[in-house]
Length: 249
Image 1: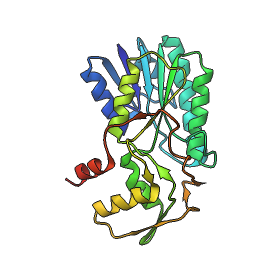
Image 2: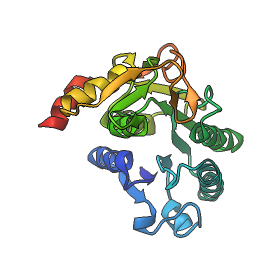
Image 3: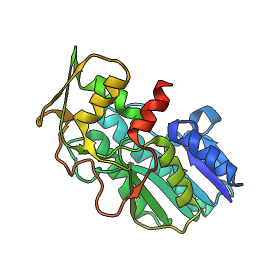
Image 4: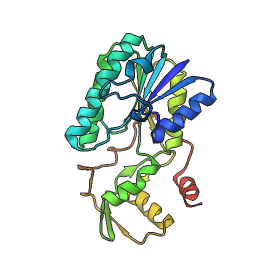
């Protein structure tokens, strides 16, 4: 099968292209650096010509509220239009667990806009909502840090390794369209503040993590359901401690 990976040169995209290629598929990594721009439309129709499946793991270059919404709306509209012309059989998109529960978060609002456009199209689809990646922990810590104090919510968290996200997306690609949402999370739950604390200990970083129920996560207060999946999610294989061990090697 010919599979086009939108955002194919990023963190998830690079892993996904590799996994699909190993399974014998013709894979096109589509991204601005390979001459494909879903916002301007440059190179998009050519990349999609003859494609059976499209997997969208692209991300906005800016997380400012209006910019990220504009990116996902424009990119998705262009992509879905050209996919319809190319008679693509399955559109797969990577979204975020909790996107439908945290409207205060501008990024999550943008992902919901993207999801709604996908649902409104006539292309068979699967939306994979993943929890936050282990690889985001450094950014979460830095974004919540005020000098030597890191203030984070004690709400439950179930992050996942990016490699597991790519594996699940590759599995979804060879299956039938779900025409709905699949949730993906890591194999264990712990609080957001504990997630950060374990990371800082592993990094020998002496900043102190303070649990604060009112601490905002990119604009939103959290509870134990905000960022955790519902019943029966797919689970990644890698545990956070194993990921940290690899990171520190």
